[in-house]
Length: 307
Image (cartoon, rainbow, N blue to C red; front, side, top):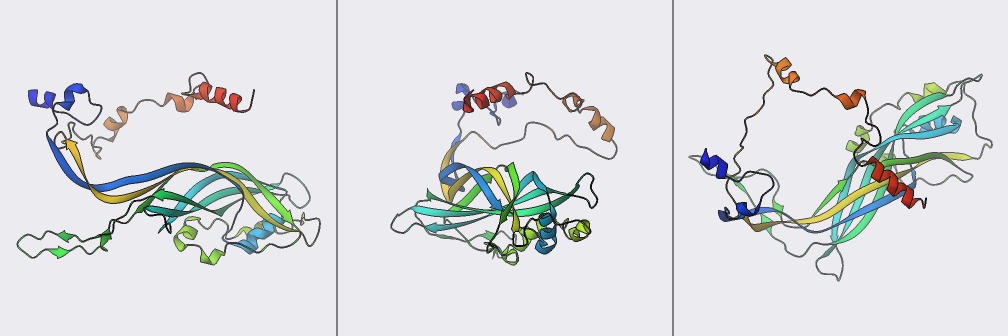
């Protein structure tokens, strides 16, 4: 019992815990050599659709469009050394963002417009320069085989080249609008060239949208006016450059769990349910003065607006 009381466990430490350091441990981990954070306002980004011809009929006949939500589906990165700048690398980042749009299409003969919800894709590129140091080694691993000859891991060989890591919050949906222009613009993104896994994550909600606009009059005022959908998004991201290195760190002891697992089985689901607190906030949403940080956020917004 005394041993458990004296043992340092995961969590906050105090000055008395420092004297219980037991050893210096050499570990292999990814060390962050450089990082940066950014707040990007993606303004009037073109939206691409899975069935462009069918969706274009919706776009041509819509009187308005609103963006419902945005979601980052995937992020591609490419790291390349900066010429004549030793230790520095460019990190090209490509964001694939799914946007869900509501198109308001007038009904034939009047009445409330029909709302057509269609997913689309926005592609956003950015480039940053970060320090990643130098070094180039190959790392090979083997798997232990008892009473036999160890064999190499089937995975691809590793190295300690710089690794790009991107952390991104879900985008803030700012605005969506239908853009009209006289001369047809050349598409700067070919749907067939997009990664297959990204396209598949969009879903197939817009496969049969063509039937939804039968009998609806075209709202374009001129036969040579072309229309496309653009959106504006707010994006917060952190980009890091790391390398696989060996670090010497202080250690207290092995990290042995100090609590028992709480299990849910078919025999006692109601017992586990009884331990869950009643979700009062779900039924009675907290007011502004009870909501954490709401008043401070409102004050900062007023200050930024000059009020």
